[in-house]
Image (cartoon, rainbow, N blue to C red; front, side, top):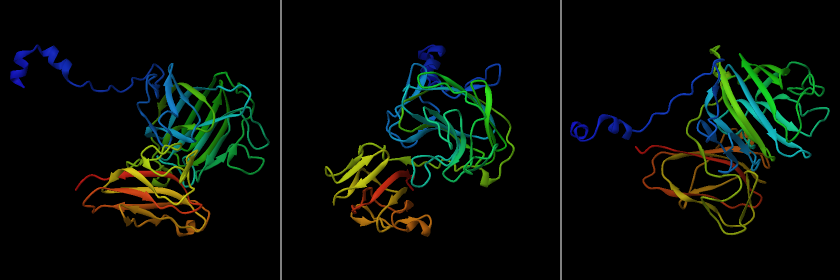
Length: 356
């Protein structure tokens, strides 16, 4: 090191060192950006294709295909968030959302997280849902709407219609404090829910079939109010998706043996679906639905022992989460899902374990 410093000026040497990323600085109101306007740093593509969410012109844009979500790297508890959104289509229904206090990976049998959804919807109105800022619990989360829902759902319909239609930008202010969530649409509070569980977790943008734009995302955090462990969403433990929801990139298969559509793989032949990459020590989880309630997997040419999270979910034609863990492998092998007529698979996540 000393010899190197003697050969080049100190300033030039320092310029060779890797730059450390600076934390975003709060503005005068205490907000920091959730999106840097250039790339998806700070965000995790949970279960979508690589191009489902992309950056263009200081915006995050989702193609809407496949269904899934892009979440923050960190969890949030008490906060005030501001954002703008716009659906491209001016006439057809456009669906998306902001997930609040969500889990790192999807709930069983769906492409979405457990959490509270802030609806981002245009060109749809019914007696049970609106295009003007509904708040509701999804996939096992709980909440109490500020006003009783006409059908008894855990869903708060807005007090008035304030959202603009497709092709126009809307502003949302979302405030979460101590399990209470409020939404202001274009400058006025219209919806609210309380007694939310979880009340700490990840924030996420939803892909649900329509092109949607997001910009000017910023957040101001407030002090913790010490949620109980049962009130905190699951924490990321390193699981990564090995299925992008639309293609078989990274997999080996015979043409026509398996079909992929909107996050779901369906068996249509007799050939196993096998990873191109070999795995050694790892944890895997995936969801299955089959006519007989069964599913098989192979590691190399040997059966991989699978467990199901809850025995009641082992019944035929229902989604169940299957898991396996390998910690004593001496060599890496491919993983295969065994072909079975009528079998459906989704949410395939792997956590590779460090070598011992």
